[in-house]
Length: 120
Image 1 (cartoon, rainbow, N blue to C red):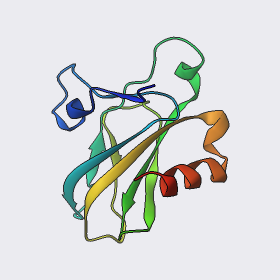
Image 2 (image 1 turned 90 degrees about the horizontal axis):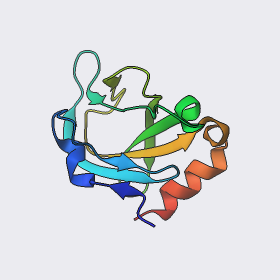
Image 3 (image 1 turned 30 degrees about the vertical axis):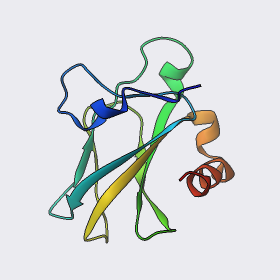
Image 4 (image 1 turned 135 degrees about the vertical axis):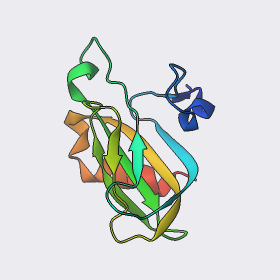
C-alpha cells in the first residue's frame, strides 16, 4: 500500500496540487532552511472534510540533527494554513519528516519513536 501520493508536489507553492500522506504514513523532504527571526518553515496542510479523521488529524514534524538523531519541530493539525514552525536552537536544516497520525495515537510515544528510527 502506498502511504504517500504525489510526493513531488510537496515542495511546490500552494496551487491545488498537493502531496497526500495516508494515516500512519510519513514523508521525508529534502529542503534547506536557515534559522532566522520568527518562524522558519511553513507547512500547508489540508484537514479532511469528512469522516473520523476530520476531527482527529494531526501531523508531527521532525528534522535530523545528525545521522541518527531526530528532533521534533512541533505538531500541526491543519487548522490554519500555513502552519509555521521554528528551528529553535538549530542554525539550519536540510531535511524534515512529516508523520501523519490521529489524535488517539498521537500521544503514544512508542509509535513515533519506532517509526522514526526504523525508516531509512
